[in-house]
Amino acid sequence: MSTFDTLGLDAPLIQAIQDLGFTKPSEVQQKAIPILLGEETDLVALAQTGTGKTAAFGFPLIQKIDPTRKHTQGLILSPTRELCLQITNEIKLYAKYIPGLHTVAIYGGASITEQASQIKRGAQIVVATPGRMKDMINRGLINITQIDYCILDEADEMLNMGFYEDIQDILSNTPKEKRTWLFSATMPKEVSVIAKKFMNQPVEITVGSKNSGASTIVHEYYVAGSRDRYQALKRLADAHPEIFSVVFCRTKRDCQKVAENLIEDGYNAAALHGDLSQNQRDLVMSSFRKKQIQMLVATDVAARGIDVDDITHVINYQLPDEIETYTHRSGRTGRAGKEGVSMVIVTRSELRKISHIEKIIQQKFTLKNIPTGMEICEIQLFALANKIKNTEINHDVDEYLPKINEVLDGLTKEELIKKIVSVEFGRFYNYYNKTRDLNASEPSDRGDRAERSEGYSSNADSVRYFINVGSRDGFNWGTLKDFIRDTVGLGKDDVYKVDVKDSFSFFNSDTTAKDIILETFHEFKVDGRFINVEVSTEGPGNFKGKPKGKRDFDRPGFKKSKPSFDKGGYQGKGGFDKKKKFEFDPAKKSKRRQGFG
Image (tube, rainbow, N blue to C red):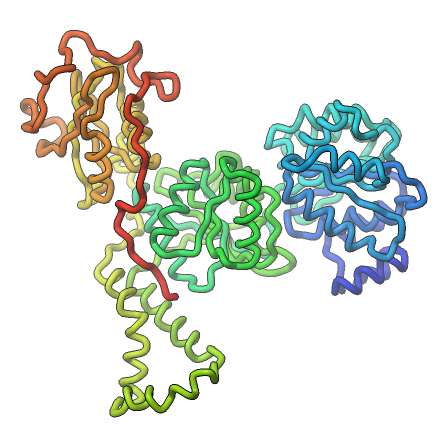
């Protein structure tokens, strides 16, 4: 069995490794460390997030640095502030028995003058984000023309985040004779370009297969209707009472909405996305690491750099556009040799993406059923029983026991257990009792096409609306859907079955959105014109006249002959100026507590 003693590391590093409790090197460490210590060479290492890459390049870098020379000898570039600080802290722990060796973190959101002062005092290793490093180079606050080693950590993530030009500019300020070590989870085209342009015949090592997923992760997918996605998410969480997860959404808006809904429904959740300030991000991540937050809802960019070893589940609320992004998402669980689960919620029209991901990561997905309400009740019931059994007795209650015994006098053991469990279980059972099955039926070509083209739902909890704008105002079904969704503050799939006529249209939403839609369009004007939305009693294609309501087409502000919209109708951000902005008030939604305490 390989140990750190056999890799060629010096005694101070071995002592630090023992202090940290490391016993056996990971595969990437076994492969990379002897190569980097044994010869001066460039290196490309492909390995998943969470496989010990920081130690794989950190130990050799520390051993090769001369602590008696004060100038910067090693530069480590990482994609995010969080990862930058994490690497810096780990390097400091590895080098704790090497006097005179200093490591400085350079990142945005902190004082650039203070960071420059730290470098001026002497920093042999600098860990930096590309944006801040480029800024400091341009200001003449750092000199990297004499570095011996440059490490690109999470190279694919840096390029995905748009740092290609920054990395090029930074590397152009480094000496040609330096050694470059590139560590990446995947090998997209842009990473290959960097390797060819700035590296000299690099040695390549691969842990697993290229772009493959970690072997410690189980991949599952669940098929649901597009409007059942959030309910499916709640059921997956409720079916795993001890869940500690990251939930991935594609957009900041979806991320915030899902997090708010989870919080409102009683889950310990929070959002992590680019609209948060750095202080807010730090508070959220601190709470997550302390497990005060069980469900962290994040965008892909915001989640980069999250390094928490005990994440049990990654839940893909929506699949990413790029396959490589899925690899990074799933890599947040199953870290440090522990097992993890990556769950994907998909609609029938997205099933083909699962097959594509399987080919890329070279691992099979397992189709699982979304748990029924009664299955969840059973799971939660036994979880509660185990929680009661494993609870450590607080003897501070002993003085109250005589009076408690008086209150409970006459109850048998069986009756007492039933009552204790029912206190918590009752409200949970009442919520899930008689709920419908969320699993989407087997796909049919015809039904699938209809769902994709119209967003049609046969959900009985659906409301049909009339709106007094149509194609004459420059709308088609897509732009009208966007207008309604953006005006009200709904999610991508909350408006569906849009049917655009000449001067009016129909659309559907779930019943839960009815109040907020009608309230938003109450006395709502665009360019002085009332936009009227009413619940329709007519089915699609059966409209036989204007609906009865408190306002009709003859009211002031409505011009039959000349629509008052700007040219081309609604154009999103570039379209008409909405005179009334609706602020979403989550307090107006119904509140229901999910799960046990």
